[in-house]
Image (cartoon, each protein chain N blue to C red):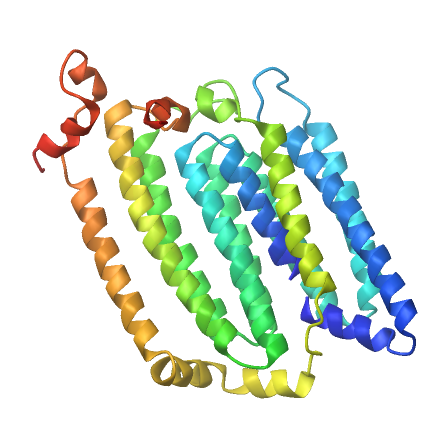
Length: 93
Length: 275
């Protein structure tokens, strides 16, 4: 479970630090991995399969997020010609 | 990690105070190791001004990994299963770190595959074989292919070159490395502290074996009886996401330079013709 927490933390670092939008989305997938490990381990400790079932749903959410996010990334790339998250600064309020 | 807790509890049931001091030192040791690893990540993140400090990065990471190994060995003892778990978790952590520090997205995706494979191996090891297999199939098979497509669609010029030479500016310099490392370190330290301090139910080997015996069968039964509504909701979510992704990606979005003096930002997408 500590491994899961550490992987989650690394994902957070990557998400904040990197400016390439594809790598940012990969970092969110890393965070999903950490959560998944923790869910399975906790389900194992409690002696039921609900942790694994929740892990399956986490997988579904990850797939949905990857699909939608990458569609948005493709659209933004067509529009700006690069993948820099900083080039969309004008969206800040 | 479950075996770790069980082992630690089994090691020190005799005196309560001994257990708490052991836990305390473990917590501080874990914090120290994590801080070392955080420093290594900070050094390794791509930065504009100081291009090459990989040696320091590798040294720090190696020291952190070594201390991590020692701590794990101290907790675990001798069983081979635990050693495999430690090696797999080191693979996962190293792959994750290298993924977020590599300047090229293609290699990041490859390192992400390492993380996935070691995670699924860990899951299979603890008896969650269905989830492990699904992890490989869905992540390494489907999601990573999608990522590879998008990476190939969006950058051609960085492929054949030296590592840093023609990498894009936004891949070479990371944004706010210090603050992001601090944020991630504090967050994972908080989660780890909660996990260590909480009283988990003791790891029951017999129960776990019973769970992993008919793992897929039990999981399917659980999903189709208790969680049937959630399964339907997940299916609807997938459908909606598919429709949304197609609707977003099928418009012919022109480059922003075409609108220099023209319409406001939001108008461009609305009026774009589909492919």
